[in-house]
Image (cartoon, rainbow, N blue to C red):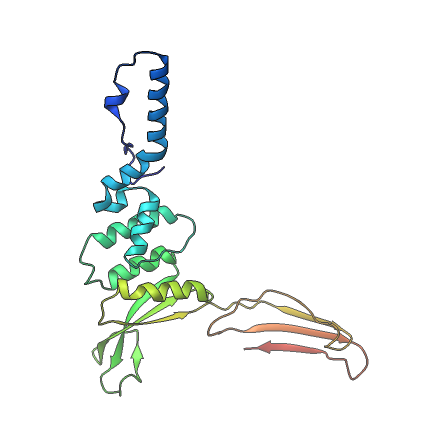
Length: 238
């Protein structure tokens, strides 16, 4: 069982370990009781001793504490280390006054290097909210809107988890919006059809989508069949 510090030790029944035994039967009972305590009770007793600082306990205790406080972490590589780090950061300050710094830390743990949070600005001369922007300037004022961008494909299940925990990690004055963005890089594609389109459809190539999609694709299409079925085309699409 892993704990937050390397020299952590489970509780021991030292008085019983150092006690005198009269015979082999008593020695066997002593060994049995010590084994049962170490394997079944000691881990739970350790967690009880650190309930006030749950991040020091077992990972199961940390997970229960994180979920109890309304935080959510997605499973994946490094889940234990990131969960302990998040909970230490959460308990280090006032949970009623969280701002963008904690939100960005939270996004980095949930979506390493692909999640950003930006507080938006708005032009002073434009009707609100028609001129919302990420760039600051002398002609703009800071709004309460926060744009959270995840550079990945949408995942409804994960998005629901993130939206559910935002009220716990953000001050009430901030209004978040969540969006996904994926860079487009569409390579050359070849479309080969033998027979009518309803009969045969085969595509080879590489396709990366963008939401919203911005990019250019080079494509080549060739068909074989009667004149009503034949289609030859080359070009680019944007």
